[in-house]
Length: 468
Image (cartoon, rainbow, N blue to C red; front, side, top):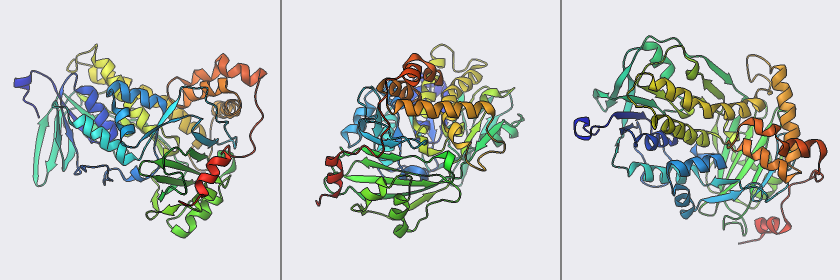
């Protein structure tokens, strides 16, 4: 860690070199010298690492995240694209079936672009960019044990490296350790009340297999294929084909309780053929598997309401999945992590990091981007049997019906699709769905007829089946 006597700057510690931790560190360097505590050894290249077990599954960065990435780290999106990533137009470069079994037309009338790559490549580019900052120190193979201090102020972090334990002093400790965060217990150990939590678990299991892109699709221009599960017809089944760098397809299949995919490689294509539409299975028939099937069951929506805590210690902040983790099918985790970091930066541009009460302001600001993504995820998953302790409320049922109607309208009207994507991409709040851009087409049209099958062109279908 930099010597504060030398730099005259506050000191911050970030727990975890996850995407959320890297974003937080990037935001904090404007105001403090930052030390990142990471329990793993980080890879030098775009490779998997133990601390991100979900990295093998398909990941998307919505356009709200793309904007946040660029605001935090100008040029980083271009860096990902230069190494094989892609900015995919929504819906032009996507074949997508909504949860209410409506196929979206491939309109080109919106500005929305998803950043598409493997998670390994994305994390590699983020690490390279953020850790090059001389104001950031990385301590690898180091485990965070607990914050130092008391209920009024956190003053540092106890860590262990090998057999050595020590306490690192800091003006701000940021927990970016993900779903497995121990902050609820740590805060209780400091003498604070247990934080309120909510869990909505649709019981989703993910099965992912990497394939060589079949036929003439290896140039990366093939559309994303997305068949979403329908909560109204439990158990739900869904899947996605994500064309990524290196002429590969990441294929993730998902099923809720009673329809879980397995790790059996011989059952993978058959499961895909059994989705609400068989298009993914049909495209996989000529795709060569490159590895075994990877399973994940850590998919529950889990939120901790730190922003509502009656008491909050100065010098402590929780961000990213440690605040709220979502069913990965919605693809919002990376976007929210970047938006949280921007919210932290914006507060610190008007408030001293070391001032009393700053940490509470930071926690409330960091929690605001969580709300939109949480409502979108829970608004679907709460309808699966056994997902939550209490059934959806009357208001939640009304909103779910309205969203279904908004999706059906957006599938047939480019004007309405723009409003829908503004919300789905986390660029604008859900109130955008009640704007004239949505309500006028919804109530009065004009709307094109609903599609009866996946809008793949004949050229695209042939490309996936043409021998190399």
